[in-house]
Length: 449
Figure 1: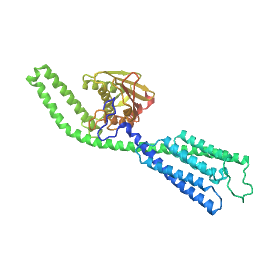
Figure 2: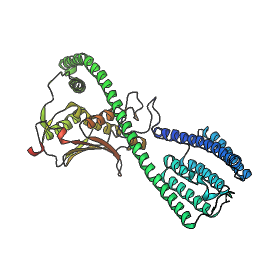
Figure 3: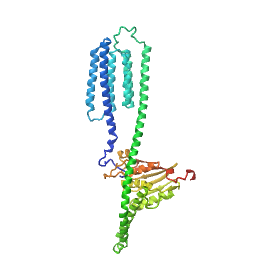
Figure 4: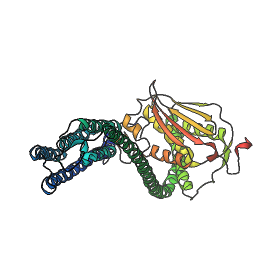
C-alpha cells in the first residue's frame, strides 16, 4: 500500500465509495416501509372511527368526501409500496413528501369532522413525532410548520359536527388561542427532545460500533502475529544459510576480481542482514527473542539511528530529515515503534519513488510529532475516509494494505494516533502523534527533563 493509495479495490472488498452509502440506502428503504405500515394503520383506524361515529354514535358525517379521501390515501399507499420494491435510493425529501400527503389528508378529514373541536386534532403530534425520528432537522421543522398551519386553518374553516345535544359548541377565541399555543409548544418540545434522544442513541451506537471494530482489528492483528511469528521462525535457517553462501562467494577469486559482482554481493548481504533484523524484530515482539532485549537509548539517538538505517537499506531513496525543538529524553528503543515509522516512510517512498521525501520531527507540549511528506499524487478521497483500514490499497495485490493498518494500531496502543491529508501544494502528508510518556522508561517523570 502506498502513501497515495487510490480507490482501486482489493479483490473481495466492496468499492470504498460505496461502503458508506449502503447503510444509508437500507435505512431509507426501511423508513419508507415503516411509513407504509403506519399509513395502513391510519387508513384502518380512520375507517373504523368514521363508521363508528356515524352509525353507532349517531353523528351525521359527510361519508362520501371522507371515504373518498380515505380511498385516495389507500391508493397512495399502494403506490408507495410499489415504489419501495424498486432499487432506487429513498431520500429524506421523498419521505417528507409522503408525510405531507398524510398531513394533508388528516387536515381534510378534520375539516369535514369539526376541525378544532374534534378530539382527533392532536393526531398532528403523531406526524411530528414520526418525522422527528425519520427525517433530518430541516424536514422535521417543515412538518411542524405544515401541521401548525393546518391546526390554525382548522380553527377558522371547518364543518361543525352536527351534535345538537351540546349546549355551547362554539369555542371562545381565548380557548382556541390556548389550544394553538399548547400545540406549538408540545410539537416543539417533541422535536427537541426526540432529536436529542435520537442523537444520544446514534452516538452510543457509533461508540459501540467503534469498539466492535477495534476488537475485530485487534483479533486480526493477533492472528497475523501468530502467522508472522511462525514464518519468522522458519525463515531464520535459510537466511543464515544464504548469509554463509554469500560470505563464501565474496572470498572466491572469480567474484573478488570483479568489482561489479562484488558490489552486488555486498548489496545482497545488506538486504539479507535487513531480513534477519526484521525476523529478529518479529520474534522479539512475540516474546521469543533471538538477540538482545529492547535497549534504553535517547530520543535523538533513536531518531538519528532510525533515519540512518532507513537510508542505508533503501538505496536510491532520498530522505530530507529535519529535527526541531525535540528534547533529548531517555527512550525505550521498541521494535514495533521502529517498524511503524519505517512503514510510513516506505509508503511515502512508494508514492513517488524518484522524488525526495521529508521527515520532520518536532514536539508539541508532551507529544512527539513526526510528519512524513511525499511529492506523489496524494490520497484519493475514499482512501482518506478509510485511512488505516486493512486491505485498502492501490497495489492490487492480495494481502496488500496492511502496512498503514498495523502502524495505526501500534500508534493507538501507544496512546497516539496517525492522520493523513493532501497538501495544497501537492503530495500527501502523514502525521504521527505519540505521547512522550509512552516512549520513556516507567521510572522517568516529566519533571526530570
